[in-house]
Amino acid sequence: MRPQQYTKQKKNRAQNIENILTAAEIIFAQFGYNGASISRIAEEAGLPKSNVVYYFSTKELLYRTVVEDIFNVWRAAADEIVEDADPREALGSYIDTKMELARTRPYGSMVWANEIIQGAPIVQDYLETELRSWTEERVNVIHKWIAAGKIRPISPKHLLFTIWATTQHYADFKHQISTLNEGSDLNDAQWEETKQAVKELLLFGICH
Amino acid sequence: MRPQQYTKQKKNRAQNIENILTAAEIIFAQFGYNGASISRIAEEAGLPKSNVVYYFSTKELLYRTVVEDIFNVWRAAADEIVEDADPREALGSYIDTKMELARTRPYGSMVWANEIIQGAPIVQDYLETELRSWTEERVNVIHKWIAAGKIRPISPKHLLFTIWATTQHYADFKHQISTLNEGSDLNDAQWEETKQAVKELLLFGICH
DNA sequence: CAAAAACCTGACCGATCGTGCAGGAAAAAT
DNA sequence: ATTTTTCCTGCACGATCGGTCAGGTTTTTG
Image (cartoon, rainbow over all chains, first blue to last red; front, side, top):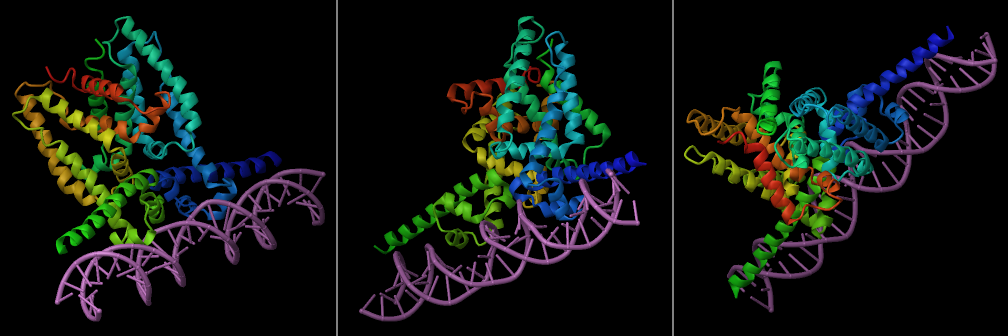
């Protein structure tokens, strides 16, 4: 009986934290760090403001948690780009995964965009360490693909930038895209069509 | 003597307004609509807060002026995409112009990104009228290019989205790009290289 | 069942927000 | 030179901000 009640309390805590993080992602995406208020996040999460502060003692801690979360998801999504992979398959799979995340986690993408636009005041250390080393590794892989004659010689860095830009555009600018789609979000078929179009545009002419 | 002094006053007014708009573009880009404060914009413009309010009676009016400005610049940059143009030349020129604007007006691009991320609360009417009709016209042009066999059959809308995403990425994410460029902005040669790489990536395989 | 620990929240604080307004300073008109 | 108009700014306001804290409630412990 002891562990059960203890588990119950833990579960409630985990649930509250999850609700707060989900709400924070939406509110931070919509208003940016300075524009978002703790009270609005609390309202979105259906909790009193004091309770949000109880779990995350400062606004910055809550924000940092949200930003680091989407960063890690993106990083994990790209680990498949390795030297002995087939370029078309690896890049295609990377684009697919990032497009899926653009659809399922658009608010996380928007928070990241806001953070970078502001000059990365919170995650600058991440950019200079994890992102920088990870990027160098992928650039090296693409260079080896070129040397092996697997793909046409293009600038690996700009290929990565173009993939990031395009996939995240479908999250960050989803409102603009909806407006140009008669006011409604892309449906399943349209998302599939979009993924194919993006892959064709970016990869045709690159991979033989 | 009368018209000269009158001109002097007018010039001062024009200069103040220009300083305010330049400052507002930077501050709105960095903090978003809700996060930016009039006092910070005034500080950036080197004027008392009251003076900013004197020229722009409300924060929303100032913001709307900034957003509409970058919107119109972008729209003008793309008027060259017409049916009887050479696709490679027209699209290449469009990309070049948008890349130039990404370099010279990055803060305007960031304000637009913030506005769209927030769901376009201010310029929604623009999206539904000017942007929508303009987009349809360009889509029709690209369709005719395809019908004439000038370019490969691709989704015109997604081609446009990809161009927007990529060109604006170099403005909106310039801090991230700088960080991956040893901490410094792209120099003249790197910008030229970037423009060529983007055009090659997006247009190779599209235009014959 | 009592003691202890963990969880939760209403009330409050100083700071800053957007903006209205009175009135002085400068320029233009007469 | 004096009036009229335009330009400019310090001050004050209610609202909201992030964050503190005392104290109540619930859960766990012994």
